[in-house]
Length: 212
Image (cartoon, rainbow, N blue to C red; front, side, top):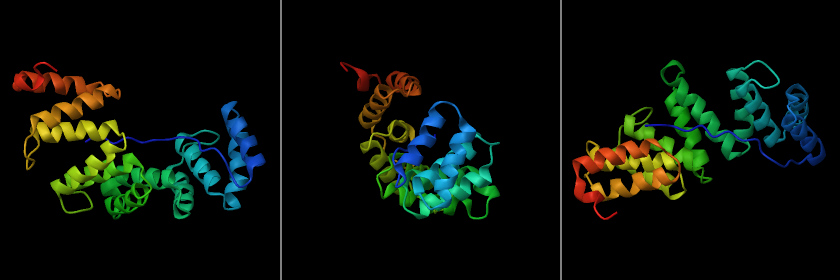
């Protein structure tokens, strides 16, 4: 199942003036200056600046890409409760997977933290861990539950995943109508691949798509 890495610069800081100056430098493409500005605030414990330093190392803006440094700064922000840092840290651990000791378990831990703050993609990625049995015991019901929570929060990848499971998933009661509804929702949200799945569903079960 597809995962989605959401990355965004956050606005606002305890040190508003300095943070805004760094943001302006970033928007102007002065990445070294922006990184230096965020770094000073990050060293002083500002979680949004810590997140942004991690982001810039992840993207290689203002410095060479450095996944290790990105993780270090994401972790500092994540431990202070920043949901997007928690999600991004979970993504990194999931991508490391088998090469990082307990990588999937660490991904699950941070996704759960982010999901508790209603980060839709965190619910979706938790669903993928349970679907694939990575870092957890494989559990289709939990996968469906997490995909469902993500979909209710507007995550198009979760709708796509639900559509696939309801249409053709093993160990899932097939429900072509639910599959159709989730594919349509995903397509409306811009997931173009949902169109191909809809076409396949309509060829296999034409009654589902009649008069729709």
